Length: 346
Ligand code: SAH
Image (cartoon, rainbow, N blue to C red; front, side, top):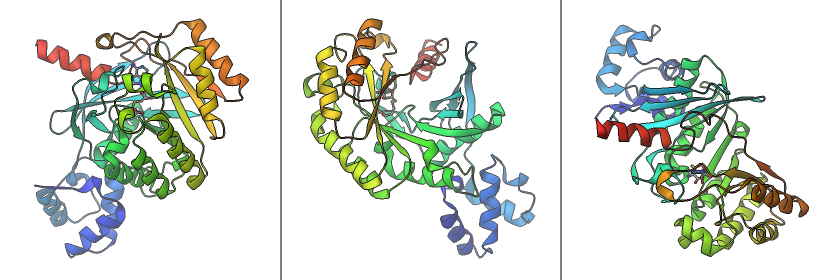
């Protein structure tokens, strides 16, 4: 088994090189090359030839191939389907906002969480991504598009808190001054609500934004669409969010998918407002992106407007997510799913 050099934080790489009997500064040289997207040791021109050869023998440099790329004609959103070293695929979406270019990246191949409305979880979890495979999505989207990426959201395929250690290492990599140097305040992490991991994340005291996929304020309907709710019900989850705010001093934002007849009644808006009172929160309302297999429908426009106005009457800031890339397979996990289907059909 070759060593995955790109998944190493600089401190670990320094140790790795010193164990090889190499001077410390070699680690920084190699780290810098890797974080610029160099894919071959032979390109590392400031290393002695013998070291390049030795590294090539014992290490590998992860680098995904672009399996598909779709560019929205409407808004310039770019969706990448990456083929990883083992042939598995994940997606990222590069979006242009007025505050800069944001990439939405995947943290796992597939997802174990089983949310009923989500295309990413239909085939379950295949495997977790390495730190380098998460970094590569940012690195190679930036190189391919020529656009500097300033913001990252961990909202693609997978549950980031189910891949906790690798996600923490990825954050360290992408945040490092010798690497892409993307500030924690420019990073959001979205979770379906794994309570012990939310508390573990709080203890890291990072300046990132935590988004919680709530989608319903009460247990019956939340458990029906999100199996995780059977283990960590709504009130337990909201207590963890309060604790998160207390420990980190950062605001939590809530994602709320508007699903016709499931999550969009005025009574649910009232209950949501009541339960979020006192949590320093913002609600991001997402009109459901229809996934054929789920049988669920997106809410009617009037229901969405009514829901938002109830939240605002109670002083809960709520925005309706702008749909970007609606002309390309925009919804999370759909491009991978369609690609798999096409491959199966030959
Ligand atoms: N596993 C994490 C992050 C990935 S999903 C989480 O659950 O938060 C990113 C967001 O997209 C989540 O809020 C998720 O619930 C939402 N989502 C998934 N499928 C969707 C769909 N078909 N329509 C609208 N939102 C969806």
